[in-house]
Length: 414
Image (cartoon, rainbow, N blue to C red):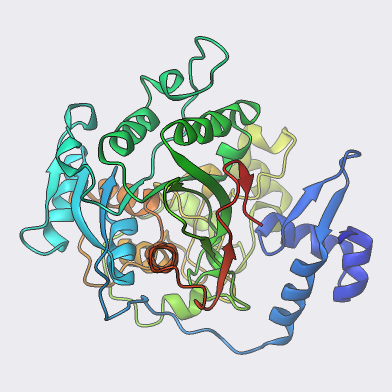
């Protein structure tokens, strides 16, 4: 059942302005009606109500299953290892990690056990055919790129020249039991939905049934408001269920995440910027400054329309962090420490992405921020990996998961 913003306001006993603000913060999700009015799912409102009534603070921890499974994976575009580590923590062993960026490769080699098959190469030049029939999962976090449509097929050949094509090629050459793609929320509407539809068509053409689901990391043991689109394909000859992580009834606060965080290097603000940001309260942003400082800080942006809610933004202790970007001090996406007037440090960034304190990043400070900001949160990947193991086990008794029959190849997960 769908509710209007007025009905949600009454159910939660909160003002409409608060509901609007929470939607912008990602605490509650809204769709738009044909008349462009906000509409909310009643079940989600009920879950949020439970969260509001539960005052206990969730503990921060990097999740790990000490019992390994027998399942194997190939990961493409491995980056700093967020997805790979999450899968390993769930119990999945990697037979190959591919990455082209030299700093990321150095990070992977520094942290994964000696002997891990880390292939430092342009993916276009990697032949995966020797792994055909020998790997259970192929996973990739490919970038969101438009396709060049030669005709109306919207299939495999239309993706040639993109990094998704290389993922699809790996799937074609290895034919794993499960193919997993990860991307940003924007893929849902990219090129009016044609990009996602072409990806689904491509995997279907290669012999897979496909489902996708938007996951919100802040409800999956990650102290960060970050949304990722997960696409799962199951080979059509296999009778396996689709299983996605189910959101928890709690979030992990920034306070819990940064407790006893190791000291490390980090960026700093220029003198005048620090003076201005020192006047922004915890959880506040540029509108909390005196009007003259707003104009000085925002410059021409002050007179432009739009929320600009990321500018001069100071994080809040009692909420998950805003989405981390490739640098903590970008003007449009400021991530100022809740209490101290400075950007988040490298280790604070890593904590928020749920990397363990022992995970050491290589390269310049800027390169390290970029690696962490681009990563899929480790705990989010852990929950996905846990579901993949349950799928391969045909485990319908897994807790905290959404289970669906493998009956359709073109539907969105609930």
